[in-house]
Length: 420
Image (cartoon, rainbow, N blue to C red; front, side, top):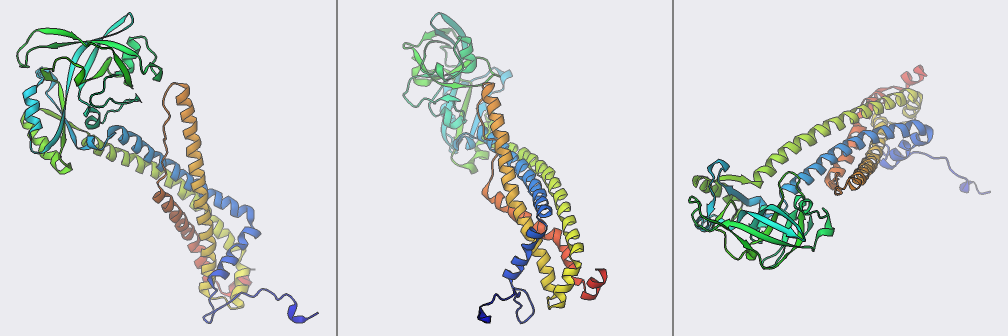
């Protein structure tokens, strides 16, 4: 047999400066998975649980932000729209000429007045009194209000949007099966144009039955419905509130000041969104702190593993130094091991966090469906946060292995063989 064909023993490659190559460091670091598989697996599992807890709690905070802010700012236009109305104790309403004056403001680009009138709704032999909101088609876009079922009506479209409490009043099912049903509507309003002067109240019957095109779920308000402005045979003489869209976000404050000068109270969704963001950011930070606490516990466990690994490998370190391994080689070897375990812990933590979040969300949606609620996506996982999680887990690995790596690097062959 040719001696040259015999398998040569594995020799680790040292460069001229007696530094192990990166590939050699990586292969040597993987030995820990073969020599101590159970301990290594449990260490990675501990990091994964800590990282998974961080991801679970922070993604819950992101999900709560998305749900709440999505409810507050259903449309982009609603963020730069102001809702104006007189104080309820003043018993004042906004006259039609005031609407024209507000729409003519230089900083306003669009208005949508809302008249709130008493209405009588009827289906078959059932009749009930409701609050009728008479609006233009741009009301939904400026107010940010959307039907929970069905759709909003467009300009020139006939139909009516009802609340779930109105459906209950009419003995109709509070779900999509009520869409398409026709109701008759009678509106009561004052004939005078001056809101300060009481005038005669008369009723008008809308000629054609109105088809239910949308449903709004709101248990905290009395029965109401939203009817298109075009369906009324006579224009309302006064309005209870008006939505004014600013030309851009920089004009919101200027427009607010002008409306306040007119004695109107102002509500802005932009303020609500900003306040909600601040509150939810605090909640997310608090949840993150709890998650980081779990991560610190798992990091202490990894540090303990690395210390035990160093104590068990003192003789091995002495042999490596005796055959030419440098201080940097020994230090980098321990750091590479801890880096690999930290990185794998981060990847495992992402899997643990996403799987636990989706399992919790599935159970929550199953319960919501059973109780008649709507499914929600309670957990959101931003890609940049997932990358950050992996980087943090790798950093935790390096930090946990730094002290054992330093101790191993400073150990002389004499001390290693003596301790053995």
